Amino acid sequence: MFWNEKYERLERKELETLQVRRLRKLVETVYEKVPFYRKKLSEKAIVPSQITSLESLTHLPFTTKDDLRKNYPFGMLTTALADIVEIHASSGTTGTATVVAYSREDVALWSEVMARTIACTGGTPKDIVHNAYGYGLFTGGLGFHYGALELGATVVPVSSGGTKRQIRLMQDFGATILTSTPSYALHMAEVASEMGVDPVSTSLRIGIFGAEPWSEGMRRELEKAWGITACDIYGLSEIIGPGVAVECPGKEGLHLWADHFLPEIIDPNTGEVLDEGQDGELVLTTLTKKAMPLIRYRTGDITSITYQPCPHCGRTAPRISKLRGRTDDMLVIRGINVFPSQIESVLLEIEEAKPHYQLVVTRTKGLDELEIWVEVDEKFFSDEVRKLETLEKKIQDEIESVLALRTKVKLVEPKSIERSMGKAKRVIDKRVI
Ligand code: DLL
Image (cartoon, rainbow, N blue to C red; front, side):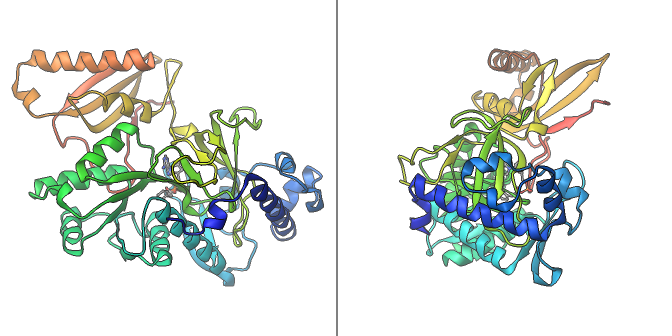
């Protein structure tokens, strides 16, 4: 189902014309109203009237998370605080929190892109959305809430935590869509089974999972555990929250709502814009946000983009590939770059490994070591030690053959790795740098 078919299926030329018009208006606004941007644009001798094509974009300055921190809390606003109706802050896992503010129009925009998002995964006004993303300063809960209301679906604002109660409510209310982080959805399935509830027996038909990287292997686990179609959703607080991009059930890339968020893929080291299909850092410009628009925001997320219309749903909204992780999540172990999600992919191909793992990085005598803790079935611990050792070696060899990285593997008993209610903590970095 389309929520806003006209804008989800714009021809490339029409989309570009719209983007340029909106971009020019945006530059005019921030030039006039945000001292930070006026200074940055003036330094590059750019005046709004120069914005005549998408090519002009490449001359505009980037905005970074650091810029937002320096302007904490309200320095990036175009409007007076009186026009702000809602404030959120990012989780701040990689430093001080960054604040984002929404005007009434921004909340309407958020509702629109989230209604599109839920509809894109197959959601309809008849659905009952069990919304287990955290409500609060995190944008996940309220973003889905607004989208479900706009769509006309029924939203159950359960937030995260209290997992047994969540399972009971899902059964009692007949939830058809589960929205949560993938790691929490996995935990919920585990708890349901422990309660004697077969997750497949619930009325769930769709899962909309995101806010953290997750692999195709994890998708298979979740789809099997719940008997659902699991779609990936991407977004970030600075841009709007959830609602930037989402998969349709074809699962070949995430449709990015480019009439509102203008994407570029750049080389993270040089800042140079890369071609369609090349992997690089996603940079986004908010074309229609009112209170806190951003120009060329460096997301830190690595992906690629295609403008080929989707063979599954016919949307022309460009698609970004599943995100591997953030540039700052990337581990560099003895010169080899690895993302936790790559390790997850390998682990989930191994039948005996459970989808619960953690990576522990240490440094001894200047040498980095990566230890992978992974849960396996209880029976391995009652069997002979030799079986455990054989399995450890098997996992070690598999990781080495795929990632060319020698690691240590430690098999642990079920439930010994902490379960997450929100974004999972995959890496424990014990290095003193
Ligand atoms: O995580 C917004 C969100 C809520 C997205 C619910 C999807 C669902 P932040 O807390 O600001 O906002 O974190 C944003 O999370 O830059 C990515 O690094 C990561 N991220 C978000 N979605 C995905 C995804 C929300 N689908 C940061 N795959 C982003 C991989 C993701 N990483």
